[in-house]
Amino acid sequence: MADSSAVKELTRFGSTQRRDAWWIEIIPALVIFSAFIIYATWRAFEGKFYEVGPYLSPFYSPLIDPEHHWWRFSPAILILGGPAGFRVTCYYYRKAYYRAFVMHPPSCAVSEGEHRGYRGEASFPLILQNVHRYFFFIVAVFLCFLWYDAVVAFKFPEGFGIGVGSVIMLVNVLFLTTYSASCHSLRHLVGGKVDCFSCVTLGAPRHSAWRFVTILNEHHMLWAWLSLFSVALTDLYIRLVASGVLKDIRLL
Amino acid sequence: MAEVTLRVFRGDRDGGKAVDYQVPLTEGMVVLDAIHSIQAHQAPDLAVRWNCKAAKCGSCSAEVNGRPSLMCKTRMDALPHDQPITVYPMKSFPVIKDLATDVSWNYRVNKKIPPFQPRPGVEWKMDQRDVDRVQEFRKCIECFLCQDVCHVLRDHDKKQQFGGPRFFVRSAGLEMHPLDGASRTRMLKEELGIGFCNITKCCTEVCPEEIHITDNAIIPLKERVVDEFYDPVAMIVRKIFGAK
Image (cartoon, rainbow over all chains, first blue to last red; front, side, top):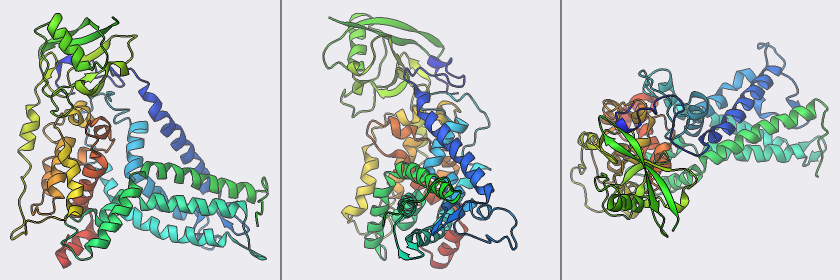
């Protein structure tokens, strides 16, 4: 611990002089992330009810080997590593789960106890968080498939149409795109690494791109939560329709 | 006149205890006013560091009800009065006396950072869009609240390996300066230990100048360290084109 003699007693895990209910901050993250992980894992392994009419669950897109010619397990298992890796290494989610799950620290000015071996993200395994930008590239490819799926969701056997599922899939891909476009690594790559926009080639468009991503990035946490909810709810809706629990309502 | 109880740490680096003082409340009073009232009427030997009383000098940092805060910016009417208000020195630094802490370690860290070095032959002219970004970092008043709340220093005491958020802000202001030609990425990785930071944003939460320390300084610097040391594609591109 730090060597202030004033607060030597504040070295136990969870000890603090804060009077507010600091633990309330971490409960939503703990509950919602846990629920999402359990639901997504179950759905990934379920291997059915992922496609109905023009709708394809985002957990299964792109759909690879649905007929099980060479892959005998659920097709979702082949692809979920991409979006999962993007979220796990995301700068916002790191903050959230370091606080809620690992308790490094549980909250600001709340002791996590003394850990002599603490290395943060400076050594294995957490040094691997630096791979985040590569997951961004992978997710950018996934987004192309999800946009394709969202467009296809408006194509019914009799032609163009709008169902509740079409709207849900469109909203979902919008949230996922905004979340991805507000990524800190993207912000760095499009212009954050430039020190002098007025001195480099294509400085003006790079500055504009950096400004645009910065505006989105200011609400990265919001986009992270909205897209987490939207992807789970989109899959849930398609599952309920595919399994016959719900009937998709046609709006047009 | 209503009174409120302040529970103030009294002691030095060898130890101490909390002492309760009754202070009359006045309109618009801040915690520093209450401490001054104690000094004036009850404990003239109470040590407290302060200067401007306007949240600009960064001197009166302390922990009020457990939250790292500037005493001059913390209003008494914003605190609950049903229990004594605790006023303790910053936990991450050694106590000199009462509320005054020894923050000299910060100045030693500061010396590790290479100062501004203009690029050779640089034209002394800056575009507004290039300076907008670094101006935010110039707002820092060196109150060291971010250093105090950072768990790497506060709980793990990694003062030998880690520089802390304040010096990532300073480094960002230099690294992103449009006329600067020095690279500080190796220093950030090896001497200031930026990898120890796990971006839990407490530094941003306590900053009285509302600098977006994590999003605008630490994460962009982490990304620059990735460019330099962890991204093989960026390394190859740099090798071929020799550019940033």
